[in-house]
Image (cartoon, rainbow, N blue to C red):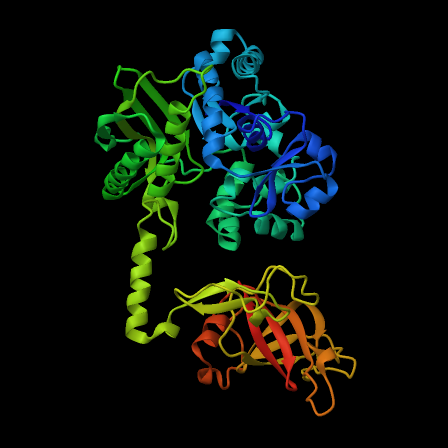
Length: 549
């Protein structure tokens, strides 16, 4: 669907400045978790950047005005902008505070051209609210957002060509970080030599899903100029609309939000019974004097009950807390209704066990885990926490379910000498013994300088071998060498090696002892395609420490 995207730059900063009556030209920044979420143009001129720590930002700009992130404030003050756009064209969807989407066909036909319609939208917002905005147009939502940031109108059918030369970092958009942090995906793609959205879009979708996961497939659909969501969207059934009559009518946001909580739970129960999830939420209210209010919120991910309550609270705050110069209801809200404007099949979303479209799986999974802990003991249900370290075995810390999730080693430290990403997908509980042979069939050993005596040509695990088609290393590692002293045992030297093994042709004659292998060895050797291994040389022997799949 072709859309106009109306984008207000640095909206969190604009909203905070308006709420506190600050000088719009003053350097200002909004922080979350002690890092810059958004900053004004004057702050950027002074060297402040998104993601920067507060101390560094204030060091670069001592006069910086600091505000904390407040989503309710952003949504409340964005309502006049949405109302101004709606006065010019129907079908307004709030993507997030600071960004509005409207269908492009109607305004373009009414005003004669997309360029004229875009100019009218900019003028309308500036005249009604005094807020600066940029307008872009494209066939997909993702392409439309990037077009709005550049203030361009992408020709119909040209979204993929528009996106192709843009940097791969564009897939890590702020709106996605609430649901899926794509910074690691961007870093991994860059390591693999993928620098632009066009190169990412050219990859086979099946390979992207297999290697990077379902969220990477959604990102690739965006890079292709397509919609992220599955194409089997359906119109919701009329009986999915839930309504609550408020008696007496409420004119306070907290009272209306309390009623919205029960309403959201009813809505999501109905959605769960039909196996669907809401991706566009309609919020409607009727006042005691008969005034009709309606707004549609577009969601980056299927809504949970908590997400629904947040959006209802933000919208009611925008309606009931409008300033005197802005239109506001003349009486309290008497009827509140929620309706799913668009739903998708919950089964096709491939959500995991503790993150489902209904929001109830988290609680159910937690109760199930506690039950298993009661049967087997608290240390039998473990959760992986990303950890730091140079050894692949140190990169994950397992903690009991319900305990505080603290890694044994801090993951955000440099850790020089660690194996670069991607990490092995399989780490056996106990390393598998291996034999590395050279071209003449002799074992490959290490010299006194931790170098290989010969290039590896064949690797055997439990007697079953494959040819080596590629290898990297060796990388020696001796940790805590500085902590050695009189009477203390010297830390052992570990040497790591990565090898890529040829596909299994089934003609391996050296299967002696193969029946002695454990289940993991069997699974590894039965993989008919290429397989990559992380080998370590420790205690005068080679071991398989990890498998890349």
